Structures are given as structure tokens and as C-alpha cells.
Image 1 (cartoon, rainbow, N blue to C red):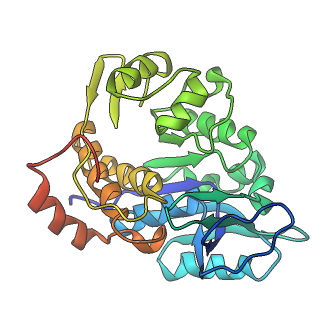
Image 2: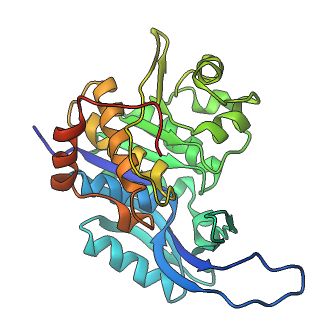
Length: 304
């Protein structure tokens, strides 16, 4: 590594409340669960943690609630070495939470309550401007208001800062407002929703990227290239997209070429699926580099 990139995440922080059950309850039915897990989550927070574990200096701009989860979330960021000076508690509002119900097959149902995430406004971006102007990259998602995402994209463009948007959860967007992005990184489902066309294989992805123009299909005005995934034994894919985004931002910030950054991020994301959870499943840099050195000459078209 030649340097530690400086990355800011303007985004969400949630608490994941995961219940493991035998069957989903019917309307009006009460059932017993098998196991419960509480963890720190939210796409923005997950991406910040992935970037930090990969070696970046990370700054988080976020809002948390006036409840027991708010201070715990801020404390978790600080414990991990992420700058939390621009995370604020919002009085009278809950923290973002995601109750998740998982059956034995791994099928899940998720309810996201945005809570304080929905109060992050353009003025909060301006309040963090002194820090944001010093970073190499700003990362965003759709778990905060769209007006804030659009404003942050324009802020990054105005100040010559690389910007990456993960459009999740997918929703209709104003393409003119995101035209200034450097990287637009949806998964297949998000790409389908936003572009309004199916994405079931590489050819579909290329057609979709031609409409969206950016996409681990690497697509730009100068052409497209499919960058295959690495073979792993997947256990839980939750948070894999966030692992990809955070690591990709870091590898780019270190000066890696786009294709190499994508390949590295593919492996980092794949490795995150080999254990349960989101942030706690992410590899630190030393562990990742060991895997990278042993695998970089091999890739596969899918994950098992």
C-alpha cells in the first residue's frame, strides 16, 4: 500500500435485529423463534467499516436516534477507529432499525425503519464541508433522503472529489441529478428496478449498463468488461454488496487501476459471505491480503 486513502461515507446507520425462525407467522399468529442476533448495520455504516478494515481513514456523516441505540452506534464507530465527529443524535426520533426474519432455508423478510437516517439533510453536508473537502472519495447510498444524495453528488463534483453511489434500496431517480457521479454501483436487482429492464446474465447486464452507463460489470464510455467473481463457499450473503463498495473505494483510493480494484473488491465481498452477519463478517486487511495472494490468479463466474 502506498498510502491510506481518506474516505467519507454520507449515509445510514441502523441496528439489525435478526430473528431465526422455523416458519414465517401467519396473520394474527404468535410463534417461537430459535435464535436472535443484534448487530450494527445500515448500508452506510457497513461500507464505512469495510473501508476502514481495508486500511482507509474513514469519516462518517450520519444521524442516529434519541434512544439506547444512538450512543451505542457512535461508540461502535469510534471503537473501530472511524471518525464520528459528524454523527449527531436527533431528539425525539428513533435510530434506524431493521427487523430481519430468517427461515431455515435462509429466506428472509426485512422491514427497514429509517428513523433518524431520514433527517440527514443537505445542511448537514455543508456542516461537514471542512472534512469532506479533504477526502479522496465520498460514498453514498439510498437509505438517506434523495435530496441529500443529490446534493452530496454535486458537492463532490464541485470540489473535484471522487464519488461512488450504491443505489440501494432501489427507487426511481432523476438521472440528471446523478450524472456527475464517478461510479454508480447497483446489484442486479437494483439495476433492474432503476433501468426498468431484466438483468439475469452478463449480456443483460451489458445492455442494462448501456442504459445506465456504469456498473461487477465494469462499464464506461470506452467499453465494458465482465470481471468474474471468485469461488467461495457462501454461508450468508447479507452485507456482501456493502463489503464490495467499501473495499472498492479503498482500493481505488490507494491508486489501483479500476479493473484491479474491482477484482480485489469481488474477492473481499465474496469472503464476507463465508460467515454470518454484516460488519462482523468483514475481513481485516492482513487477512484479506493472505487470501488475495493465494487466489488472485484464479477467478470463477459465480459463488457457491
